[in-house]
Amino acid sequence: MRGAGRSAPPASRPPESPPESRRVESFLDKLAAEGAAANTIDSYRRDFRHFAAFTVARRRAPEDASQQMLRQYLQSLSAAGMAPGTSARRLSALRQFFRFLYAEGARGDDPTAALDSPRRAQRIPKFLSENEVDELLAAARAWPGAQGRRLVALVEVLYATGLRVSELVGLPLSALSRDRQMLVVRGKGGKERMVPLSEPAGDAIAAYLEVREKFVPKGRAAKAQAWLFPSRGAQNHLTRARLAQLLKDLAVGAGIAPDRVSPHVLRHSFASHLLAHGADLRSLQQMLGHADIATTQIYTHVLDGRLRALVKQAHPLAGAPVKR
Image 1 (cartoon, rainbow, N blue to C red):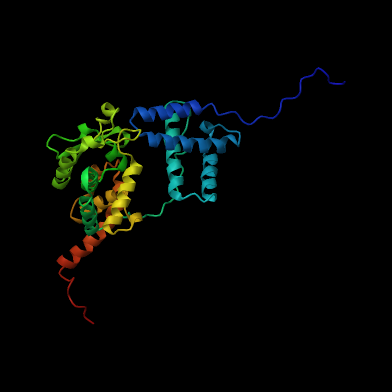
Image 2 (cartoon, helix red, strand yellow; image 1 turned 90 degrees about the horizontal axis):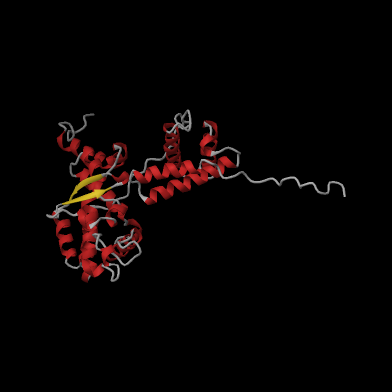
């Protein structure tokens, strides 16, 4: 037979996994070393995998992507109906990655430097009124037993400090000062900040500490003892999902729609109410743990109302009748 003995031509193969996957791992290792949260690293990993699928389909390794290819990628996200905020987050991850490659000498340029972020609609953060927070706390105080004491402490601390939910559930017992007036919080990027506790929050924690041992799981006491809010779960401390569900249940008892209450809504309520009572943006930025004050400025919607009230009260012509 003609051609017998010859090896068959190689079948077409899909593009191999890009070699820069090692660079991605190096970049993620760098983030981890700098104290980035595990959730942040997982989110970045998913973003890089999505981008790699786009570039490999065009026979280009992600680390070699051109500025034009990056524009095409962003356009594909928009065409797929992705929200501008999500697209902006993915571009932010890519910016950091390409800056890392440039700094390491793996690229001679940064293709993201001239790219504009997708425009996001400015959203006013959702928050509760001061009366609604009072109702939420009253419902927590009516909750019986040790569960009730823990719930009061959680709500009081959230509303008194504006902590992110991951920061709250991950508080070590050592974060609480001896006089229970301060918390040492490790935020994004491993940065520590001191956050003052209100007197009601300090009292709520003191009452909770009397029953805290009831939440320490048997058999894993050594691991769970490290946390301010220990739990029987695999993480040995209260989870974000469990806290969110507790707040939904509490909202029902307070007569508030459950979809209006979450840990993040209480963080927004803390910031909005603090500004409404005269706090300045820089102080609020420090307490919230924002790296950029531009992030804190989403709360300036509160200032609009305060300034209108100030003008109405103090301007000499505010109450003058209009002459016709």
